[in-house]
Amino acid sequence: MISGHDSNIVVLTAAMGFNLEDCVMGNFHAYWENGTIPRPECHFPWFASSAIFEVFMDTAAPFVKFKYNNDYVGICDGKVECPIVDFLTMMRDAINGNTYEGYLKECGADEFGKINAEIEQAINMF
Image 1 (cartoon, rainbow, N blue to C red):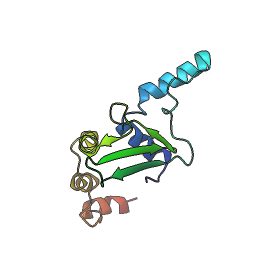
Image 2: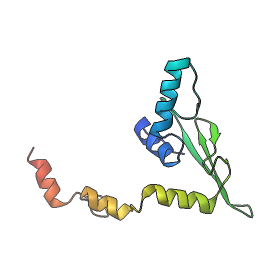
Image 3: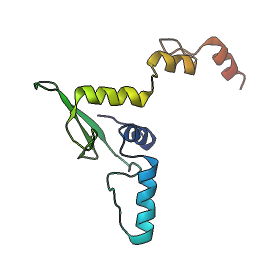
Image 4: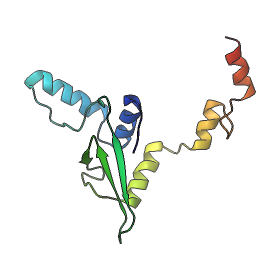
């Protein structure tokens, strides 16, 4: 289960491919034009939204299911049961080659999360 702010959940749902800007804006325009919401699963996360990954490993073909606000969402070409290999490929593509080590380097921290001396000195100037 993922717990966080709406800004964390929206990034996750966009990476999953179902809460992209085009569909959010499409729902917005459709609602104001004719009162309909063509894709109800596609919206900016509400307060207390939830994102749950269910991993089923004890089957002949392991798979992942994704629940968003207590509803299953088809994340693999519209299918709710996503083969684990396809899910891992989708996640690898979503992070675009970024790694934890790259994150630490970009943020100027070492593997223990300590800020590099140069950045700490710059912060202390304020």
